[in-house]
Image 1 (cartoon, one colour):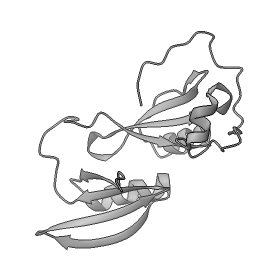
Image 2 (tube, one colour; image 1 turned 180 degrees about the vertical axis):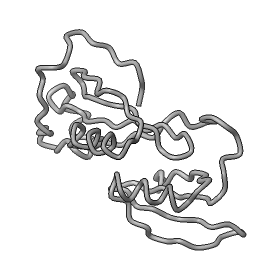
Image 3 (tube, helix red, strand yellow; image 1 turned 180 degrees about the horizontal axis):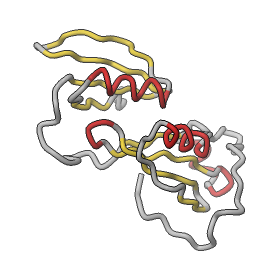
Image 4 (cartoon, one colour; image 1 turned 90 degrees about the vertical axis):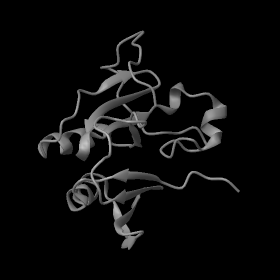
Length: 158
């Protein structure tokens, strides 16, 4: 069996980073321990996992990670909560396939917050279970279409 288990991130301030993921994304600390001479924190975020290494990033900027994708069925509410907490987040970009916004996490980590639209998906992708908020019956989260521009193109990839 092969399965992507987690993403391991450097954290210049592990406690601040834990707080960010707990407050805004409901993360649960599964383990907080020393491994190989450094603090390692294992977080569970929905069905995914993040591991934090309590050290500043070795290189400024994004390095080899462009962004982390966070699927939600409440994009507008999530963006509103982040803005209220003074987290830098873009306007929601609306597209037939799904809506998204980009947000800044600690240490300059870019997050893509996205809400897919089941009605725009092929039956194959719906059946695949790739998106947690889209059921195998093809029913997804109802999303308003009034603000979506016709022919809009995405300017970021997931």
